[in-house]
Length: 114
Length: 114
Image (cartoon, rainbow over all chains, first blue to last red; front, side):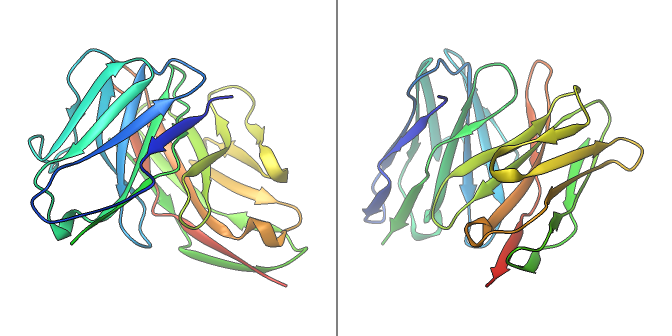
């Protein structure tokens, strides 16, 4: 149980375009979803926390207009990287929890912006 | 404020020998503590968690960790390393209230030598 999926697993896009990444909790209802970014050989950096039906809470230094997060239902959250640039290339990981602090992580999405 | 310190960025052990990955934390309140494992290009998998119940926590794949409040530590151990244990390990502190505060350690890369 507690499976989280992400789609797509890989995405390559041109600079200036927008990319949407989906995060789904497959067998439970996630009251909270988290979005992380991971640079090569580094730890995860929390970008934002979102609760279903409310606006996401962004960490300091993360641009809200750049990284749009929508948590429309208890099983789906989306991260949209708007006007992507090469420096946005990274490994994006989502996680979901249902009120017990334990986070269940998705497999990650690797974004490459050319 | 809370923080997590993983004392070793890289640990190398021989197959069949014990594993010790160290984690110290600081938190103003009673946090929950987690260990996650990440294999290359994959998401994170929960190994075990401490949430104020038993101080010795057993997890998957033979791993366990002991919460020591006096030492503010939550070290991860395994009696006998297996080749498949080679991965990156993250210690995580979570503080819940109206908003979950999540802090990741920098990670410890475990190398297992045949």
